[in-house]
Length: 400
Image (cartoon, rainbow, N blue to C red; front, side):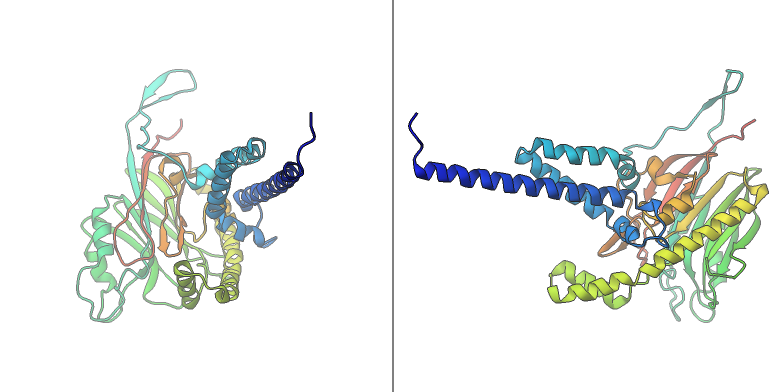
């Protein structure tokens, strides 16, 4: 066979060099994406007091997941089959965390109508429905503002939601000429005759609140011996003759200043490289918040562990926890409990909507006494930067 012309040999050399360079680059980038996604998925295993970088990685989990999916599709299009298997393995490894972040339940779960006893016999049970709603109201709209006389959409939502128990955070009212606490309570008293407020430190008009159709048998503030702020309350309710425990919490918020939030929005609209350094400084603002929430979840867990009489009660932990499903806060607070959104939600369940920060940071955790039938985000305009989470449970009968 005659030797190839010079130009064809040169073309082959260039092609092979390009092919090798692109393949090496694709392999290296794929490994990097796989490692970042895996670290982000399991960032909840490391406390921010040990290594805070993992908390930041967990925060950007959805971004890394989207990047990984798009890069995987590009590898398929360019026929890099073997390299694409790295991401396939990564998706399988991260599968439980991906499902936790974005479950796909397209219909409500079916209630349990019978149970099997230890002797093997099957017994029919009634379907005992129990609904709970948690909502950070962001100062209850304008309830604390003087001379506001119109109805508040938040209280209308409370009236119409159909929940047995409503847990509110950043519940605000006026002590002068705005909407007083008495006015607010009277607006829903016919539906929720029982309520309780836990005032914020140093404030007389801002609290977390519970509105209940069922009697409140016990309430107690959860705090540490050093009186460190947790803004969390423990309740025991009498629900159709059965005692259940409910925790309403509002953990430390991410202290991003208004100016930096405005900067992030502007960057989303039009990129300016000069603002990157300021954005980096803004992200550093939330570092102490990660550590504060880790400490607060420890306080709450110790409190529940020390309550011997409450260990066997049906338990719900609800509220604005200001952290995502890939965070240490989430894992620490949830413990061995179930997550209602993971049980029956559809999609990421975004509950915080202050652009460009879209996350699910409001959670409802439950003990094995509850079966989640439905969980949904109530997308009602209430002037809050959060959406309410409404969960329908089946309260299972006590084990005998």
